[in-house]
Every structure is written in structure tokens, then in C-alpha cells.
Length: 451
Picture 1 (spheres, rainbow, N blue to C red):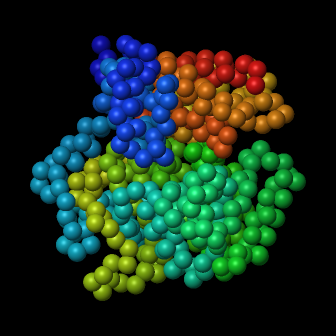
Picture 2: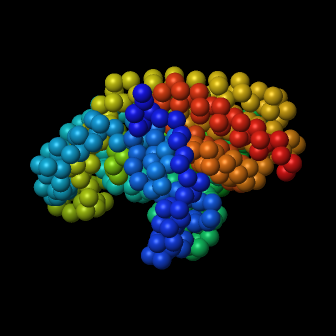
Picture 3: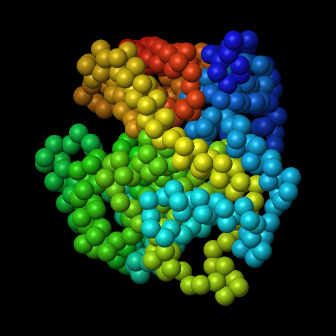
């Protein structure tokens, strides 16, 4: 008999149930209204999670195909990560990361240097993905000597002020637009299926951006995600990556890869950048890195990181929880899983999911109503109106229906037309079969409805 973590959905109340609804009312009374979306049909409040299962406040068991925003690639509450955190917390829960560093910080930095494909790697640790991006932007500015930044439309790099400057989503930017750095050029995202003329236009736009920099000064940094996760699971096309790398080298640019969602095995490799043809100078890591614990890192070869001056007793970028020992121990355990073959597991399971979804949705794909794409365990199913493009809010509708069936997914894409899947690697065969069937049935039902 399967245990919690490997169960299929088991619903004992309507979704959301009375306990979740009551918690929604309590949350509304104490949290700023701009944070959690609350309605009669959403959300469910999590009580516990293990493996690929989540149990809510009403006792409903869900199959989680999101890994909680991609974090729990190892599964919820992975035993080795929890044990490492617990051991370290009993000895030293908190330290003085940049003054009197904990031993656990040294061990994690050594593990990072071994796993990233850089010679003589150096890292700066942080707590959130946004902060890792902030560090990368500072590092790239110092290393390139130029202030301008090139980014892609659809990119999501975080919501702190620097990271938000390179994030292109208008809803996040609009309330604080005057606070953001104006030296960022956002290029249209290059379509993977673009024909010769469209490719030539995309490359010409890249050249124009480099030849006509923003008023703040010439471009020295390029920042992008190798696969745009929240924008609808959009891998950077190989043809565009090749063109970009030629110009990066020609212009002496610093390429920052935001691998917070895609890195450390999620897409079937330690870095997804190498799968799409990118050769970054700086890499941002997070999510999977902590195995469920908040920790992130900005990693680069020493010639890049040495653009920072040596500390004379005052770190120029630091934080209270830099090198938090228990988080470092958890991350070290997570990296051990990466070295033990996690990327291969993700690639194999991702191929299984993609094959199953494409088989079950073949008729809709042929009719142009659905597109299935992905890399490793990052999969997107876009619902479309033939001739008119993505169908707005169709992914939202599908995700809501799946929730009522006990399957947790995320809507994605600029118009909410995509159902995004980023499950853990430990799905059982029964969970894989159930996930493919449930997602395909709901997507087909939504796609067949009149727009």
C-alpha cells in the first residue's frame, strides 16, 4: 500500500473545503491584500507535504505537479535534506556569515565549486532568488565596466528593485516604475519556430539594441532565463542562442543566466543553459538548491568575481543570513543528490510526461488547439485559438478545474493560456499515469469549449 508522498488524489471535501475557507477569512484580516488571491474557489491551505503529495487543512490529499514553484524537485520534505538541516540546527542554527563564518558555509561553497561547470568558481550566497539576481547584476556591472543591460520580454527575475528592472511583466513594474533602472532594453522573445525572415529580424533587433544603447550608457550585461518558466515554458531557441553568443564574445558582454527555476537538474542537466546553447559567465541558482529551505547563490569564475574588491573588513554585498549554517547543510545534501544523478532522473521522467501528454492530446495538437513543450521536468501545455494565438485565461481555467480533481498545477504565460508542470522526480508510475490522464482530460475539455 502506498504511503503519503506516493498517493493518488484523495478528496474528502469539496475544494476548497470549510477549513481552507475559514483560513482564507483569517488571512484576509491580517495580510496585505496585494499578496494572496482569495475567492470562493481558491486557494487550499497546505498543512503537510511529502514526496509528490500535499495534504490541506481539510484532510484532502493532492498530487502536486508544481513542486511548490519548482523548489521541491527532490520531493517535499526529502529525508536526507531534512536530516542534514536538523543535525546542523542542533549544533549551530545561526552564525555570522561574513564575519566569523560557520563551517557549513565553507562546505557548501566547495560543493558548489565542484558541481558548476566553471574553472575556479567563486560564489556569493544569499537567501532568495531575487537577491542572487541582484548580486549577479552588480557583478556584471563591475566586470563589464558598462551600465546598460539587455533582457528578454517575458523574463521573470524577481521583484526587488534591481531584479524588477530586468523583469518585463508590466503588472509588477507599473506601481514602482519610476524607481526602476532605465538602462534596460527588453527584446521580444525569439520564437523557436520562426522562419528565415523572422529569424533575420530577431537578430537585427539584437544588433540594433547593442548598437543603440539606452541613455544610461552602453550595454555590458545580458540577463536571461534559458527557459522562461513563468512566461509559459519557453526555451531560448538554439539559433538565437548561437547568434547571441557570437555577439557576447564580439562585444565583450557578460552573460548572466538566471537558472533559479531551471538549474540543478530540473531541465535534465546541471545547467539548462548548455542544453539551449548558452555559455554564461555568471549563474544564479536557487529553488532546488535548498531542497525546500530558502537559500540561493550567484556563481562565476574567479576572473569575473574578482571584479569585486577584496574585503577590507566590510563586505560590499552581504546580509544577516548569508551562509546560514542549517540552510547550507540542507543545500549541501541537495547538491549530493544532484551529483548522484538527479538531472538524468528528471530528463527521463520529463520525456515520459511529454510523450504521454502528446499522445493523449495528439488530435488537439493537430488541430492547432494545443501546443505541448518542455525541457526535462519543466513542461508547458498552451491552449490556443487557431489563427489567433494563445487563448487568454485558458490555463487559469484548466488549473482551477484540475485543483477540484486533486491535482495542483500552475497557470503561466502572459495571458494565462498555459498549464505549467514542474513536478518532483519521485513520481510513482501510478502518479505519472494519473497526472497525464487528468491533465490531458481537463486541457481537452477547456480547449474544446467555445472561446
